Length: 115
Length: 113
Image 1: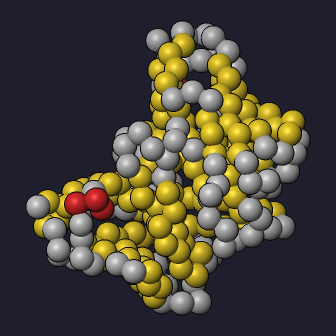
Image 2: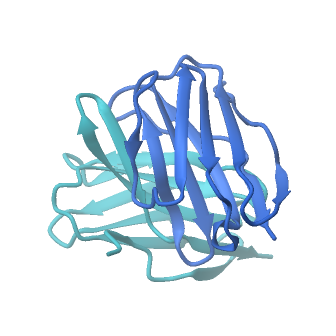
């Protein structure tokens, strides 16, 4: 039962254009979301996050949008650069006990930025 | 900068062996996690720990156990390795709190022959 879904396994975008990566979730109790970026042979690195009390969060070239009614979030990268080529995972965070929380990851989208 | 160090980048073991994967973090984080990453399946949580000597099952704990005797160290144990445990294993740590991101090590690529 995949609670966080990334339906596009891969995406190819030309350098300078916008990359849009999508993520859907099923559990309406999720209220904090993160995007991670992963290069081959490295661990995932945290990119950007959003709380359910917001519908948008921006950090430089990266913007995450959250549509709670549709249970959908997206990551926009503008402009896309060759160094952005990586696998992107969205994740939802839920409290487990007290202040301990755990992440549920999507299956990832491989972004290729071409010259 | 947070540093999460996994003891091996690559490991090859035989079916039936007991395998230990070690992870150390240097930021005094309360929470530590073990994931495995497989193509098309993303990252799946095996076990996590929110305090020394505390452990909780994740989504796929079968065939694994963990140990956290010290705050900075979290070990994943494959009791009797099987070929379906060939995977990339990732360790992570985080501070307490919903808004604290997890920081990952570079992973251990484990092959069970």
